[in-house]
Image 1 (cartoon, rainbow, N blue to C red):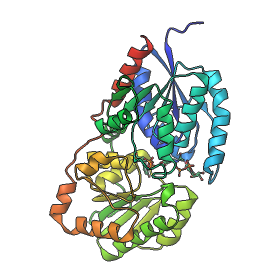
Image 2: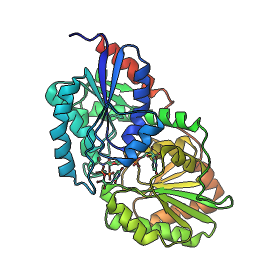
Image 3: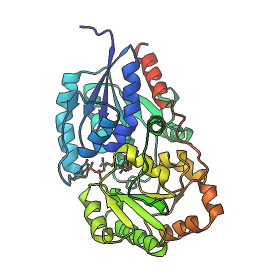
Length: 370
Ligand code: UD1
Ligand code: UDP
């Protein structure tokens, strides 16, 4: 039977996908032409549920695939194996994926096998190095190749896609939906974090990248400890990602320090509150590189490469690498040199204006009713 509405299946697997897909789901719910369905692969379990709760989203299908310390091959195989049946049952007119996780790569592939058109939200981010970040660069290249709509956050991501030969008509510069989510959350009542005293200077840390496992992550831990030792007025708050490859090491190396507070991953609201309260943010996360500049917070990125060059070019994010000496000296500079600090705390938002989801929904509407 022919449907009067178009069925759009939105796929989410991990915390950042849910944060960035939530505004699209909410915007599609308001569109009279759309029947929005939410598929949670649950590649992440607790961290995914946290975010979906914040935005009042209940998945229509939950694959519950997460296993403790899952390997990339087993996760990929489990997802691909199960996705085909779900897509057959859901029979969507279009499928949306966000970002560059294993969920994204496998969902795009499963949709391709069934001839379902794919929209890639946050398309065109590239470092040009397939192993950095690993495996995300490969995931987004494959997802891009399989997509009909490329929703690129910036002109620079659009340029990457044009260089790879994608048709201009398939690329739409929308801004990043993370700014839509951030604007929604910042408008809510956000009590400041209780872990930090009023007279303490807060440094917020996150770290989880696979290419940093092992020695680079030990360097990061050495840097965090050195910063805490050198600056008695500093409190370091580090919500630890549950991946045991980082969680076990972070606890062993840092938990005993009196001014380093390790905690469970924070819900999105308290995390945004912590970003607002922080003086400096040290991270290897993708999303935090987009949110923190919008909040006027200097970010030191503990990675060798970034696919988000815009904020670096504007001088509000600095790439320091997972290198103890570089992390410590850049942090020292920001803590001690007010002018250097002001230069990085300009409050620019190169990643969006808060209307990315509305643009995505209107492009889908136009193309699906052509
Ligand atoms: C994944 C994504 C990465 C993304 C990150 C966001 C892949 C390959 N990696 O990395 O691109 O930046 O999510 O955080 O897609 N775990 C829990 N509870 C949770 C979530 C994770 O216990 O809610 C633990 C489990 O032991 C799990 C492990 O973390 O096996 C790894 O999860 P996984 O999604 O495979 O990798 P991440 O490192 O989280
Ligand atoms: N975040 C959160 N709680 C935390 C740490 C991060 O809600 O304790 C949010 C953060 O604001 C950002 C997203 O999670 O929107 C980033 O997720 P993550 O670093 O796990 O993944 P990445 O962006 O690197 O893919």
